[in-house]
Length: 221
Image 1 (cartoon, helix red, strand yellow):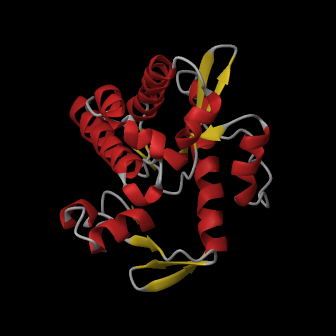
Image 2 (cartoon, rainbow, N blue to C red; image 1 turned 120 degrees about the vertical axis):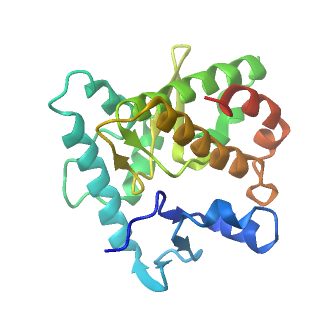
């Protein structure tokens, strides 16, 4: 049986950047699934994967995380950082984002719509919370391989930043995560996040203008 690669996904953004020579090919060698831009299909190693199958994988990922932490009091707090209402097996994946939006969450790139004043200070506070959450996952053996602004939902509640991670199809579990593994996985996640934040065609104007702050706060373990 062929060994599974460390990461499984390549976003449409990164594929586009690769074609334009804006990203080294080796960054993508570990990833297999390519979004076509279609709302209905993806390509996986030359095969068509329908959206409903990817939604099933997403729902299963939420269930897997819940099962992974439910009997361990030291890990139950991690449920705060994912959507909390996916118990129905027929729950449509497309509702996850909508439901979090109704709760007041927005994707990370919408930060300037949440904060109008003292933006630099608040952006640094938010980055520190995002870093803390990602490291909490990693230290507890949950590895998410799809770092990008659209996969981090944020909300400011009574002056405190709340963070939820979505698009969990790429999650893997590891019972024993070394400090070296945590460092490498964290920095890879943030490399991907920062690439997407700074990629011109994503049109994340505020993130691009403040990419140096993001790098200072997020880049290194």
